[in-house]
Each structure stands twice: as structure tokens, then as C-alpha cells.
Length: 453
Length: 128
Image (cartoon, rainbow over all chains, first blue to last red; front, side, top):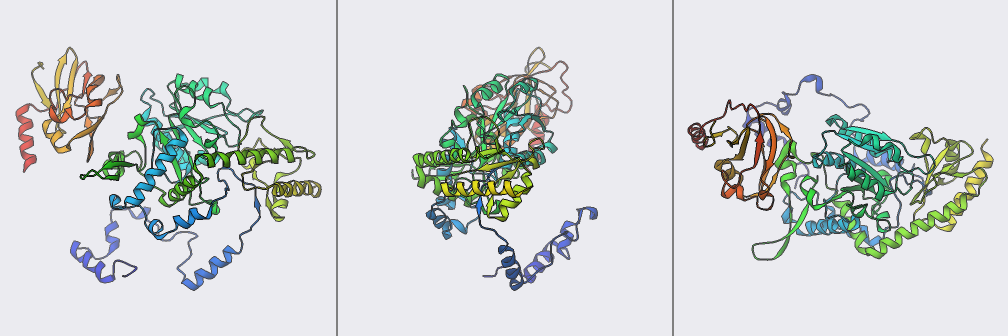
């Protein structure tokens, strides 16, 4: 079989059939000013030998050390069997099944994933996944606007302690559609949403609550959810799935529960791998199922009464609804979801709780170890998960440079995203860090503080 | 317009006078037949205002979802709640129990709407 399905002869036959001379003629209707001849920064074609050499040289630049950067992507132990199974040909080679029902194994796996995710979030329904956590939030915002018919506004309250990249992606996707994203501040003392600022935005359509928030602090999710619902505001929860094994899941926040939950699925069995591929998850109440974007797998009976799996509620989707679909950019990250389903199956409910507890105790061990260092200040007096903001007595940029050159990435420089948080590093500790790792961090930080002017 | 007269749109909605300044709206037999068995009707909020020709309801069947366009400008004052539990009533009785909503309008503009004979001749052209 040819790798390239259309030979020159095939193409010539097809062009002759429709009566045009070359493929470019198909794009005649696009005005010339919108056509780009070359793409800046894209090199010319290379042969396999050249590519292998270049990629090998790039790979040699990878550094292997201790990484304490989380900020939305989390390093967890992934049992070997997860990717051993996920990369089996039956899962690995198939992209989205266009003849979906022919792939009963894939559909059953997605169905199990949806069931697990719904359970973890305490919601009725989950989609088959979205592109990533940030785009899942953008989709949740658009969904909230469709769902909330009591509000004419397209205002969305976006606390500043939300992941900055999520906000940037949500801005790119939603603001061109007339959505207004409203910043509200966090309290400098505890890093939590400043509730006094909320009341002036009671005309908003939706409130986004990230819990744990970007700084790792735990919000008063019950109070925030009840306030929003009392103002007919839809609550969008952005959560870490591992944390939900231990914390109250969105479906039971406050009296009525958050309306939509979304976030990054990477922590569930997907390696960090330089930032992707990851996947976004989204769950909601049953009554909103028709406004959920993305694919949904359902279980049914065939004409002989045998159990089977199908794609369901498809009238939401773009092959039927075109521009009025619930989303036109949602992709199901099938392979990542396969890994997550394996991961959750292996750990089980109690296993996930154990992972979350282990993360929490390791973080506390880390905080105890560093807070006594001279000049170090642990910011935000609140309960925490995964992350801690540390204010350094010297240039955070220099400290990060020094520590990275000695094999430890101490965390994310928060001043890059929050100018008011000068010389502050956001450090992350999960269950993979040992007491020795934490000691190595503390010793190197002490050394850095001495060495740096 | 008397209460017995039913008018039609080219998009296969029907409208008839329901009371003083209020009008009942639904989709036609032809529309329900083309859609197939309905599984869901997505209603607008009560008191939502629409202009003539706005897409204001979505009817969803097992194989398609289709917009329903408002035949007149006005305010939705009532929806057919019974369709929430039994949307296929639109299939069995599209111009009776399967009505969709009631629109209130002070000076309803009936221009461009067809009477039954005109609508029937439109359907005949579609058949060919």
C-alpha cells in the first residue's frame, strides 16, 4: 500500500473530471491578499538523515534533574503497565474512529472513562475529553453562556488567581465572540478570591472558581458557589483531578453544586513530556447534557438485545449542527484518555486518595523544611495542595538560574505573571519527591542565597 | 386575523391567533415528517424577545437538529411544557397538541406569510 494515497495520475484524473487544470484553482475564491506563500521560521524540507541528526542534537539539550515546577502540569508516578497497554497497536494506531460504532473496544473505554470522571467530579455526565485544560475552560465559558438564559450579559468573572495561561487561552477563544472576561483580585494575605469584589458583578453570567487555585490555596468553594447561585450565576469549577480524590468534588459544592467542571487531565497517567499532548476534561449536570461540547459515548442495546456502545447526543455536534454546534474546535484526546482510564483503573478509588494524601504530606514536609531558612517567606496563609508560593530575599531570577544550573528547577517565577509578587517562586511537590529530594532543594537554596549577591 | 386562520412560513412554521395580541406557533406536518422522530425541543426562556425571522427554538430528532424561526416579532409568553417529557407529540399532532409556544405581539406583522392554499402549492414545488 502506498503511503501517499493520491498518485499524480489519480490527481490528474480527478482534476479532469471536475474540469480544472490544477489544485490551486480550487482555492480561487480566496483573495490573493489572504494567501501566504511562505511561512516565516519554517525551514525547507529535509531528508530523513538530516532530520535524525537535527532532532538528536535537540534531544541532547534535554536536562534531567529534579523538577519542582507544577503550575498546571504535575509529575506523578505512572505504573509501567499504563503506557504498555496504551501503546498497544489496538489503541495506539487508531485516531478518532470515524466509523465509531465499528470500534466497540474504543467506545467502551471512553464510556468507562466518562463514568470514572463523572464519579470523580460528582456530576451526572462527562464528555469524551477536549484538547487541553485551558481550552476546556474556554468551552465551559461558552457553554455557561448557552445554559444561562436568565442573563443577557456575556460577562464572566475570572479571578486573578486562575492559571494565567487558562485566562489567555479563554481570552483568545471567547472574547471575539462578544464575551467579556472580568478580573477580580485575590487577597494578598491568603491568595483567595476577594469576595468583597463579587457583589458589584452580580449581573455576570458565570463565575470561574479554580480549586486549588493557581497558588495552590483552597478556596471557600461552598460559599462562592452559593453566592453565585443566589445571583443566577453559573459556576464553572476548574479543578485538578488528583486533588478531587481528597477534596470536595465540584458536583457537591454548596447547596446545589458547581454547574460545570473542567480542567487538565494530564495528572491522571499522562507524562509531563515538555507540555503535551495533554487533554481537557469536562463534566456537568444531566440537565445541561445538550449544551456539553465534545463527543459523548453512551451504552445501549442492539436489535438482538446485546449491550453495545454508541456515540450519543450527536445533534450537538458540528457534523450535524455546523456553525451552531456546541463547539467547532473540540477534539477528543483519545490516546491520553486511554492512559487515564488505565491509570484510574489501576489505582482505584482508594489508590487515588492515597496518591492525593501522599502529595499533601510531601508538600507539608517541604514547607516545614524551607520556612525556617533565613529570609524565606511562605506566602498565603491558607490550606494548600500541590503548590506553595515562596518569597525569596534575593532575585528570584538569579536563584532559579543558579539552582537550575545545579540540577534543580526550584519552581515557576511568579513575577512573570503577577508583577506584584516580586521575587516569588511557585514550587510544587507531589508524591514522587522523596525526603532526600526535599533536602537537596533546601541545601541548594541555602547555597544559592549565600552565593548570590 | 381570526382565530380559525392558520398562516405558514416558507420555513415550515405555522402561526394562528390565540387571543388578544397572542399567537400560537408550531411546525408543520411537512417539517415533522422531514425531521423524523423528535427527541428534544430546546425552548427559549419565557419573556425572551425575538424579531420576525429569528431562530428561537431548536427541534432535535435522532438524526438532525433544526432551527425554528419566529414567524412574527414578539415575546415568548408560554411554551408547551408537555413536550419536555414527550417531544414526539410534535410528530403525532404537529398542528394540535404538538404546538411549540405562544408569542405575544402588539402589532404582529403577517407580511410574507402564506395561507393554506399558498403553502400547499409551495409543498408541491418541493416535492418535484
